[in-house]
Length: 450
Image 1 (tube, rainbow, N blue to C red):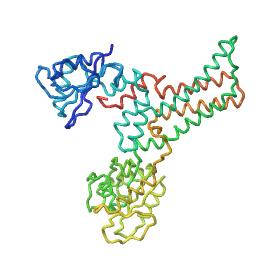
Image 2: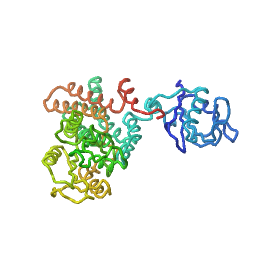
Image 3: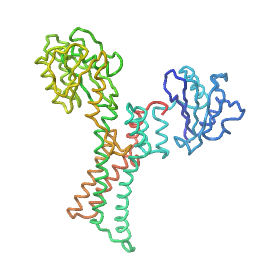
């Protein structure tokens, strides 16, 4: 018997709507004690998935809100258990009082991710789908949201299950021949399964090769904005963010440390790092900032070098451009285009004014060109976390070992051992064989109420 959990699913913010969710064997009975339908009927007699209008009571039995309630009976619910949901007005204070009323009626506070964890444990979704739930909540771009929705729909599960099923057939055939030698079972020949294992390796490789892109899509492209002091780096950061995040003054050296922010630029998620101006200085604090700036540029996947177009290009500017071009990807930005130009032209540079915002769209286009969307990858089949990538990598390694063993002419039991190792790794991917501690760590990422 599962205890009944309750939580506010819409967070502690003022909003028009606030949702409280319950799940557990007594969820419907608990909500019936605090919600009174205007029809006079108890929620225990309500139809599934039908919104009911009524009043929500506090711990003293007084009306707390006029709202809506809906129930879903097991197993046809998100968690696979009896569930209930209150759709209230979005006052955080009122929602907290409503939660206390539910606790008094027999529920307890849900832990982070406990609703989705119960859905997984009750077979309503596999681990890749459960992880897609939190990815969908945290999605910063339309592409990330679309991919998470595809994973929630089982895109990765289907590909992994297809490979798992083919390996199960191989293993079942081998053991059937071994265990029932007197039965009329087709002889087990390893070479007949070589092509099947090759296809499995190719299928998993297609999935694994999306991980780098998926990691960038979810976490953002590490992007360093570098340049001389007062070149316009912080102004560019503020212009891309749409608000004043960094302090901007005419005094060189205002930025002493790195500032990091996430921003969606033309559909590409960037982890923008505004750095201290690069120059030789005797100031100890500024010198440390310059050192961190160089480190940020060396680690970044994209470096945006900001050059002041209203000043002559200096030797320091040339060094900054060289530093940027050493990065995997780089863009040269000529800042302050609203002022008279004094610098020489630079090939393939983007002219931008952080004051008038002229050229910002050109910069967005340049970033999009560096990180194009690969529409050839089916929706949902982009790996987005290291746990999934590690499991698939181990499955591929095991299958490659099995394939090599077939080529070498080793005995069937050695090949089957590698195939079963691959099945174990795929089981970890989807949750068929995952350990309890790994499961707990996955759901620690979730927010309360989901």
